[in-house]
Length: 175
Image (cartoon, rainbow, N blue to C red; front, side, top):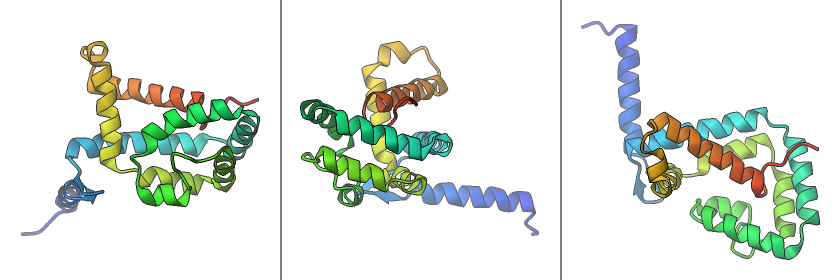
């Protein structure tokens, strides 16, 4: 039987999806739905990084951190750390992320960033971690989003992520 190009592509997609379902991140089997959720958010995040001005981003955030009172940094970083402590230990080691990370270490981390590193960070976050964050968001807002489609729920969650990043350390408004 001759395999046409179309059947070859279909076979390639099926094998790719089947392989993807079996991938293990941090001892957790990734469910297909988790992979879909994670892929959507990773794509959005990479698109966001692609259009951002990385040098302006770094400059604004370094200034913001440098002038931030220590108690405010501790409070905001404490909230942020609760959410990111579940990321892979390799990322935490590379960027010296811990409960006791200092303002100075965050500034060093910002200086080292480039778009390539941001893409690598996005890729390194496990699918199951992103899906858990999304499901936790849905559980908190279950009554609000019951009448929305899955796509609307993803869009709402993405807007929330961008708002939270803007409010914390990651994104600042251009001066």
